[in-house]
Amino acid sequence: MTESHVVTLERHIIEAERSHPEATGAFSNILHSITLAAKIISREVNKAGLVDVLGATGDTNIQGESVQKLDLYAQDVIYNAMDHSGHLCCMVSEESEDILPIPEAFPKGEYVLVFDPLDGSSNIDVNASIGTIFAIHRKVSDGEDGTLEDCLQAGCQQLAAGYVLYGSSTMLVYTSGAGVHGFTLDPSIGEFLLSHRNIRIPDPGARLYSINEAYYPRWSVGQQRLMQHFKGLGDDSEPSFSSRYIGSLVADFHRTLLKGGIFMYPADSKNPNGKLRLLYEAAPMAMICEQAGGKASNGIGSILDLVPEGLHQRTPLYVGSAPLVELAESYLAENQAEMGA
Ligand code: AHM
Ligand code: MG
Image (cartoon, rainbow, N blue to C red; front, side):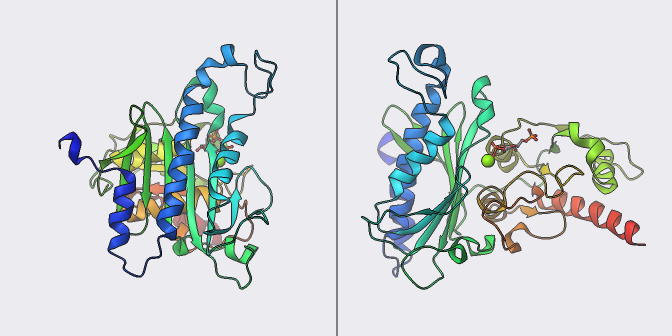
């Protein structure tokens, strides 16, 4: 492909919209604003290594100005990029307990944006990859302002979902229900360029499992047996699995999407619903994974069927290659059956 034939994210979104003559452009506009926020956050994340020069986050920099924590900064960037478009009726962020309303000064629209502004932010200090996760829902309630009813919708109602990975390069991966596409930020021109068209999770993919194994003693017997299986220690084991765990969902998920395998954050005795949030972490990843031919489960059924009861509700998550997610479900079900017997 020559430079004159590169496909920018903007062009990709416009072309996708042309195949929907009924589209109003609102949706494209929302995605476009998200990419602007992503570029600004990417720039700040890349400066994070300069803490000694600029002042640690939550601290005061050499000009005596206080330096905001990056996750709160990222939330502000996204909110400010999105609040005035007239397309959103409200937003939900991991960093805010309640719904984020649209300011009175701006018109309200027909969509809801849910997002985790900077997931895995504890990895910033060690220069490991972190990410932004987002999804878009259609407003379902009457009235202008977004309500809980608009926000607490099942993952299968998501119109689009995506993430931005701030890694060795910055990538934006998204789906609006017509495949999964990945774009890499070219910092020299400030544009996301199509680099991964129609991503499919490889089948058979890499035999990789990804989980925080330190929690083994707190897991159910079913989860422990599943891990024995992956390690080649069970009666019916197929060995040759390898393990990868960064501890940053976007990075662990991105590898799983491109290489195959399974990412797990199970329930345990301390966290009966696991750690990850359904609305803006698990459900967007589930939509992306299923659009790429994979599967996402809470260990019992599809993540996309779960209707959140609270904005920050947690869920166990098993996501990746379909046969491995099904295998996990079968181990957990077997254990449940034994306990019930
Ligand atoms: P955060 O939302 O507070 O950043 O936590 C979410 C992160 C995920 O990125 C990652 O998958 C998980 O926490 C790792 O948790 P743990 O340290 O328990 O393995
Ligand atoms: Mg998070």
